Length: 235
Image (cartoon, rainbow, N blue to C red; front, top):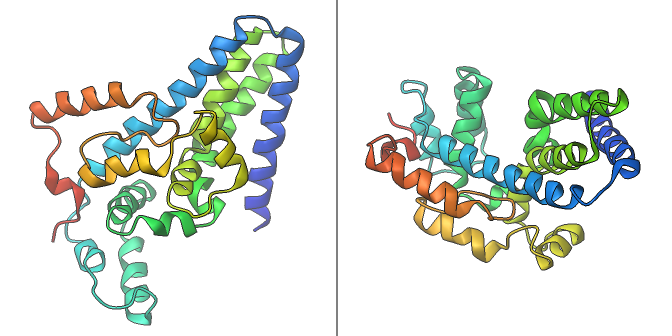
């Protein structure tokens, strides 16, 4: 628990430091840089979502058995089966499996804790990137526009799965609702298109990049690189 709180606090403090260092260097280039960073974070959310949705789970690990389990998912039997299966997977394989289970049970993501949603992303990518931006800004090697771009890219990428979870949570937190009203986050209705098809609109932040991600999907699909069998675990 202490480790998790430390990571979350360090991420928040690091982002605030980056913002403080951006203020005295702010110029007109910072405005498009802020939007560009937000767009790139959305694009990253879409490409990662696309890749993990269609990445095949390793066979022979019992994943199909727990994926299609028909009893209570709070039962001792199910929890024991799941624990045994997860122990056979690498951390990356567990994340890919979670993307499969999200489709038939989408609201479960909204009930997960903040750490469950974003902890891995913070430790592996977002926090190191924010520290690197701190160092560049403190040593004078980062102009204002670069800090602005980095702040929104790191924030949007680090919180992407939290934003995704908020699309399956009612009511959404107040800051999320405000960001939706001004178009910086997408709405549940917009995201529902993805769940209805599983073949488009993979981005989960603001959705600005969905036209690009959709073209990537169609291109890969035509080349036979995205098999529907990857959407669910196979026996």
